[in-house]
Image (cartoon, rainbow, N blue to C red; front, side, top):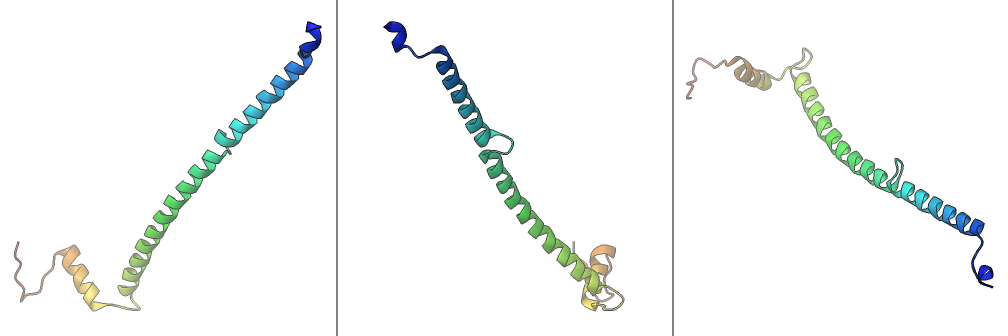
Length: 99
């Protein structure tokens, strides 16, 4: 009678095997290379990189504007004067430099 109440060993092994597989696949879905945590990490990194891209695009636009304003086709004399002062340290004859 006592051997009748106990489940067969094969059923117990099958149950434990399926339980192990379920736990393994659940762990892999959450923590694996393509899991939920990696996806959240990748999305956060994508947001940071998008912000950096936007900042760099603004820098590029500003440099392109300054380059166009100093080109042969269009010359901004105020910008040229500013660049000559900043880069070359030039001043006009009627100016006084105070340091």
